[in-house]
Amino acid sequence: MTDDLDHHRSAPDDDLDELIHRGDLDGLVRMIDVRCSSRDWAGLLRVRDRSRHAVETGRQLWPAATLAEYRLALLATPEFVAAVLDESDGLSGRFTIGPLTEVAAQHHTWNELHSELDLGPRASFVAHERVLRGDRIDAPDLPAVLDLPLELQDWEPDYPLATYSDIGAEFPMPDLPDDWTDVEPLPSEMLDDEVDLAVRQLVEPWLTGSNGQADVVCVEGGVAEALGALGLRRARAVELDAATALSWLAWAGASGGAHGRRRGAAAGRFGAWWTLAALGDLIDDWPVPPEELGQLATELRWYRWDAHEPAMGWNLQLAVEDPAEDVAWAILARDAT
Image (cartoon, rainbow, N blue to C red; front, side, top):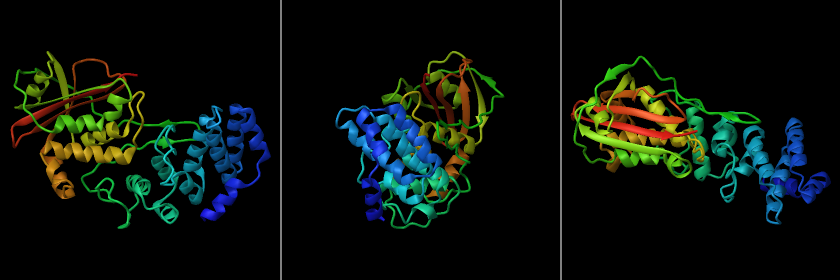
């Protein structure tokens, strides 16, 4: 199959070469549309390859290369999807609207892709993305990139999934309840734990690739003390079930925020599990048995909170109580539009 792809890539393509020579970005975009419509995946791969190569000669054709490889990952047959997920190609997907592993998983099942993919980290991410879309995967040779089971657990939510199209994408938030109850924040002393670092890792693209902020406090007591430790004078909260809370954590972990790079739903699921492990002081025991994390999730009490302000941009405002240990956390992570 590699020899076939090499032949396709080197085939004569005078119309493409002329557009590349002129640096005609608009013409290349029109060509991409035409080749997608005719399902000319070999021709589309040549657009990707030759547009990328032209950048080395000073032609600013990255947008064409990026669009071509995005469309290949989304729409092409498995051998051409594998070509843009080549483990040796460190440039693929750098500028697309979502990670190519997530894009490819939208329309291609694991059974369709696995025989074409190199069994490296990208294949592992594709497998985990397909798990979130309902595949049950038996692939013992995949590298354990995420240390998560390749099947959804009974206690996990229906994670919010991106929907990619020819021209863009939608990244829905989970539905959150809003039947608020006022809470009077109470003074409390903060405790040290690992949840702050876990949350910062969860929303890292918001913090380093955008304009976001993150604050996490841990206190003795409950949600009122945790919100007081954030310095709030008034607040309100609504209790969440564990599945909704985990869905919200995973959405944040998948997102790039306003300007950061999206990491994808598989990374979001990992971030939710890792944060849950931090809440249970189980990081040193990673990977944690799924049933143990599931029991922890149901034993904790989860709350959405705010300070009577309008919700804007990307936000994760979650409070968590551990009744057995008489401790609570308040999480505030935001990124403006």
